[in-house]
Image 1 (cartoon, rainbow, N blue to C red):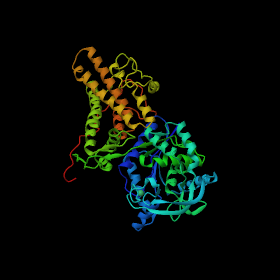
Image 2 (cartoon, helix red, strand yellow):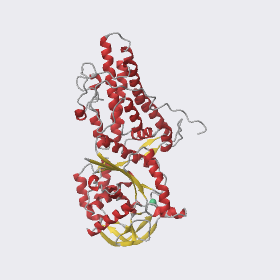
Image 3 (cartoon, helix red, strand yellow):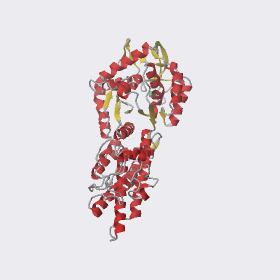
Image 4 (tube, helix red, strand yellow):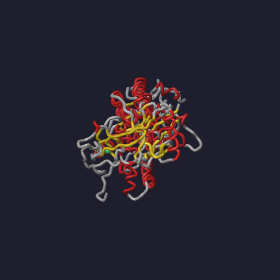
Length: 532
Ligand SMILES: [Zn+2]
């Protein structure tokens, strides 16, 4: 099975910020999850480089649009690398391969009869690069987003017959209830479709910075259509000499932010249908991370700057916080003190401590060798069946049933993987965290340090059982955290002598492996010095 996930392509006319990082990290978590399940994954991100705002900004700065996009695109490429994203390709809509394929698709749509010439008149916002409907206008005919006064524009251009797809779109939504997620976003998209679709203009005259229409090169394609097509065009040229379209199309997930819902859930599937192409399988619409009350934390300023967080705490901490603090799909507040609280109580204390004390106890009480579970034979359990069987720790009759049968742990990998398959990034993390906390309570319940002092054979057996069960539980939660915390889990899996491979083995291992102790995975926060 192949799995294809995309981020929105980022408008190159600006600086990368937390919103871009958020979409990128979400798509990366899904890509890493599918890869470790053994799927054939393609992960795409990139930059949207055409349109009037780019040519205007270039003019203001005394450069050509090409010079401007060549200067800005690397900033986004750098952002993608810094959040540790494992994209397979970075598309730029000024790529020759993209432009050629956009022209092929639009030609096919015209040949299919969905393109016609007409006059468009309306209120135009140059900064949105979009005409506004009357009911969208702010007071005094202003753009509701940019709050600037709009001018009435009239132009001859080419239209896409969106109205012809009303029924087929309704059918698509009917047939595939999971086409748009979460559900409230699906309802929003469907309501937009049901209120009646009007044809949309496809091209703009008088502009030069865009993809020319092949049959009317005095017009360039409306930037949104050119941009949307990136998800399809990239597969044609991402790998030299190889066309990946048949292998990966249709996309499994488009991850987008809520402000571009209409384009991705209405225009885009219609556009694909018009070109005889399959619509994507699903679109996940995420919300916004909002800076609530601006309070100063001890190590960061009052605004959560993703790059500052990465410099001080690493990309893992940012990836964890964004999906732990705000339910993926919803809007929610973030803050620098909120970040520190989660970092300290959850990453450093819950998970970091679980890891260090488990490794330390195996080291101290069993000479760094994970004991075999008492009563079992030393042969490894049948790990291959374990994901479907879904036991976290000890398979039946092995390890401590107090842990293996606990609802927080029993069936955990199967539950987490099912949630990640549905892009429920926060719920999956919630499940993992419940298990992390259960494992910490288990340490308090079994008190291995007391068992270690005892001379009785039964206590030695209990200690073996506790250390085996804990190490096994730690191994499984660590494997499950790989997509969220790629750097720290890699170190920890190394210390646990867990081979890295796909598909990951969630089934129980026997004992016998030699572990290593680690310095803290998430060191304590030190207050920023005044010089910072
Ligand atoms: Zn605007």
